[in-house]
Length: 279
Figure 1: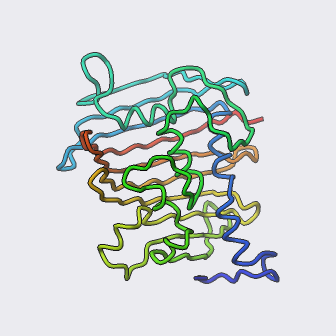
Figure 2: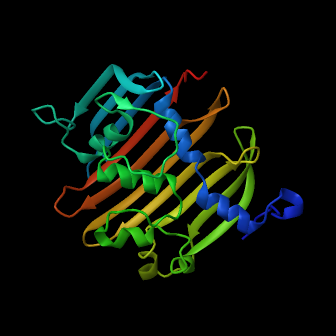
């Protein structure tokens, strides 16, 4: 569906089919996150864990500097504050959620960094990291290796078998002073409740900068109920430019997940990245 914007070769130099092709093959979002690790910057984060009633039972805050020399990157935490039920007596996390965010954003050891785009898997990544990259950076992919509950098929929002559940909308907007195309994949309102459960991705919205087609904003909504997995997650990612380099500036996550044999977790995570040192 086209909403207040006309896509045509005459007006834009590409067709609707071309546009969807750009969306499916986009690598700018992924490169933005490679820049996050490649360039030195300051970070400030807060993670909250909630109980069933929505009350905060644990908080973890971090502030520091992500250093990089273009080959290696490492973190120096200036401040780490925690209270409530975050750590065990031995100092390890009580929950999986902070472990997952540490792996993605706050690696404990020095890591390799590069701006080279490669489809080859990093053997050092855990399976959870690989799946997070696949889900986060490739809209509509079915390349997720986790097979619990048949998740991989349900991520392929462009697959013919999944198209019956979604509306696909192209519009435009102004975001942070930039003219953008907006591409939204959203579950159809008329879908019956039992059929809604077949769609893990309930919404993906991407704002593409009209000047260069970089993803400048993206949001995700995941809902899934299965006897192995029960989850409800929202993710919002804000991007910007520093010396013409495309970088993530704010990331927000709020979600619930419950996996068989694990304790259910409800969490909220906020990350701000500032003062990028970009040549």
